[in-house]
Length: 352
Image 1 (spheres, rainbow, N blue to C red):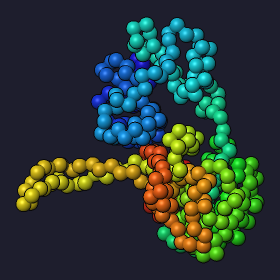
Image 2: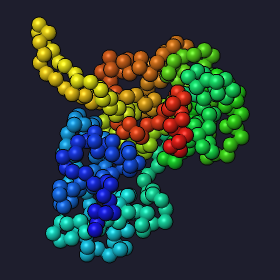
Image 3: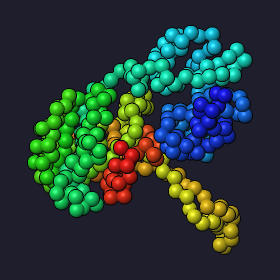
Image 4: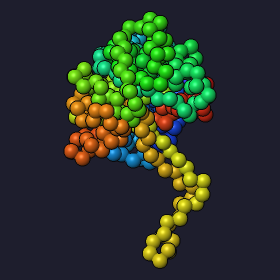
C-alpha cells in the first residue's frame, strides 16, 4: 500500500503548522504528505510554511491553509522518462503519481531514480560573505584557551569550514573575515587549506560589538552581502533568503528560528480587581529567535559608525527608525544548530 512508503510523513489537513514543522525536524525531512482520510490533499513543504509565516499566518493555523494548490504531480499515463524530466525540472525531492480520479497511487523519490543524492540545477549566486570570527568564545572554555572558537572541530572539519563550504556550495566565492582573538592561528590554519574561494582578513584593534568591525569594509563591498556568526549552522539554502530579501525590498534580512516554549503549569489570565478572566493549561508560546545570520544591503556599511562599539541590534533599530525595511526569514528550530555553549556543541557534533 502506498501509505506504507510514507506513513511516518503523513499528516492531517487539520495538523497545525507548528506541529508540522516539529515533525519535519524530528524526521529530518523538508516535506510531509497531507491526507484527509484516504484522500490525498497535497504536499506540505518547509517552503510552504516559511511563506505562510512571512505572510503573517499564525503557526496555530491548520496546514490545509498553507498548501500550494498549484503543485505539479505526475500521472499514471506518464512514462518513467516523463516523470524523471518533471522531477528534474522542478528540482522535486519526490513526485506523487495520480490516477484519473485524483487518487495518489504511488510516489517516487529522487533517490529512487537518480544517482545524485539531490537535484541541483538552481542558479548559483556570488555574494560576499562576512564571517564574524573575532570573539573569545568564553562560554566554551577551556578548549578556547587553546584554540579559537572558529577552529573547534565538528567531525572532520572545523565549524568555520562547514560554514564557508555551505556558502561556497551556493556560489559565494569572496569571504571577509573579522578576526581578533588568536587571529594568527586562524590565518595560519586557513592558509593551509585547499579551497575554491578567497579570504580577506580584517582585524578590529578592540572589540567593536557584533557588527561594528564591518565598518572597516567601507568601499570594498558594493552588492548585498551575508553576515554570519562563526558558531552556528543552519540547514537552509541561503538562496531562498536572498530571493526573499530582493522580492521584499529589504534593507536588512534576519534569518530567524521558530522557537517554541511550553509553560509546564496552568497559566491564569486576570483582569480588573485581580479577577480571573481565563485559564490555559500548559500553554505553548512561540517566538522568533535571532540565529546570527543576516543579509545586508551594501549601503548599510556606511551607517555603521567607525571605531565604535556597535551591535547588529543597533543597526536594526537605526534602519527601522529611518523607515527602512528589516525582514525576517524563518527556519525551523531543528534547522538551527548553535555551538555557543557546551551543551549545544555536544548536540551539534552528534548531529554532524
